[in-house]
Length: 331
Image (cartoon, rainbow, N blue to C red; front, side, top):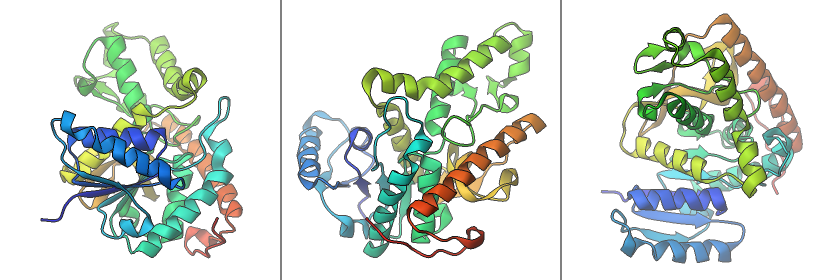
């Protein structure tokens, strides 16, 4: 039986937290860490190896490596990129990180990699789209983290307000992982009760919903102002996606999926619920949005499309009709 192998590209706080979460759960037998600072990757590999005698589920090979190690990997996870600064939106980072992503994408493609790619580099909808366009990989084998973290934040805050387990809540944040994301409350249920039912039963108010949505949207900025970066939440979310994939669960999860006409948009990745299994993402789930919610989704998608134009210009990429690709210079 083939050993489960994960390659991480970018050994910053997000990447390292992700690897630790995977090791702690025993998700793979082999981990390869790639970073532009090779000694840093080597140090982390040794440090991670030292955890295994103390962990209940782990007996894995952990080493620093380089892009040729991607060839026989099942999953490559990309967290590399310039970090978000206090007061900066995710979209402000697009030009710098598009160049970094193009360089990474070409190196992974050259390795002969044929597995699944998970991307968490911000702005993630843009970076996931750039990666897929540069590599030409099957859209179903490229997955962005999308709004999985926003959704986790939403479910946690709702659970706190209603004093129920997050597992009893079906709720999503969709569209751009950024300031134009939104919550389709019409599709939200708690223990199979709709939001309108909860309001009628005086368990929650519309003011509560507005406050929760604002908290979800501002959560990252709050954390960055307090501790300079967010990493534990997204790391745990990425590990949950890896678990779903390896276990071939065919589970519906929120992540970054490629639109091909769903939600009246196409040609890029965005945060939507979809079915995930061992082959990647199987199907984007079309939520029954209200007219107002569809308008919000359309506005968010327009921001993504406009920002993609900036990313393509930054890396000298020409994509007529979002179909053909002419690769530009790499870093």
